[in-house]
Amino acid sequence: MRTKMLIASFLFLSASVIFFSCNKDKKSFNPNQTSDNELVASSQNEAVAQITFENVDQIADEAYTGLTTATKSVESTTSGLLSPCASKTIDTIAVPHTLTINFGTTNCLCNDGKYRRGEIIISFYKHYKDSGSIHSTTFNNYYVNDNHIMGTRTRVNNGRNAAGHWNISTTINSTIIFANNTDTLTWNATHNKEWLQGYWSPSIWNDIFLITGNSTGTRPNGVTYAKTILTPLERHLPCFYYVSGTVQLVQSNKPTRVINYGNGNCDPWATVTINGVTHTIHL
Image (cartoon, rainbow, N blue to C red; front, side, top):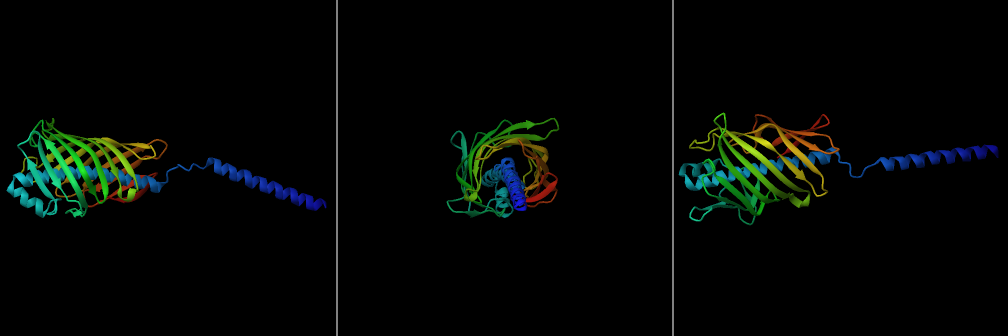
């Protein structure tokens, strides 16, 4: 009988230990804790936002030069980002002037392999390469690979810097709803483009420039991160992507992430490093 009581006591004690241990585990578990996979996904969305708005610049430049310079019109249809399914119109009579790039209501396959639809509308007073010019961009049902791009973008030509390079500052206030409602990102950015080569060249395909600046991103759960470009993002046209540069993402109570755009190769890939582990992301 004594033996049975000892066994029963032992089983009760074991069950109590397991119960309290499980409760302790439940108490310490945070259902809102972000996994590395989620951090990689949000880093990829940040990178997509960055290149999406950078390509708005390229699209506007191609469309403007294609409509105003015959030589560049030929170039834009053979090696540029735009494809024949995008129509371009310009009104230089009204003030401010208006440039509209219309990709249609169904997906238009562009030369960078991405599908676009809807309109990019640029309002401006002077040629974007003239010092002091201001170009304001809005969007009408604009999608890139089914990501819905909304908001405003303002580009100001600040003239030459101390090194003699032309500088263009860009302010972006946007919201991106990613395809299939997988994520929503409110993205606000302030960038500077330093034009190293090809600014007044008759061809747009020898341009080299650097992007610096910062941005913030807010996701639907209210979580906000801050981005800083650590080393300038470098573009070599006609490459559709950055060939180098690093970006740091800082978020409260989460590990710092660093996005690396490579060492000079033109490709749609970048890496994001979290806690010493490097992941590959697609742009």
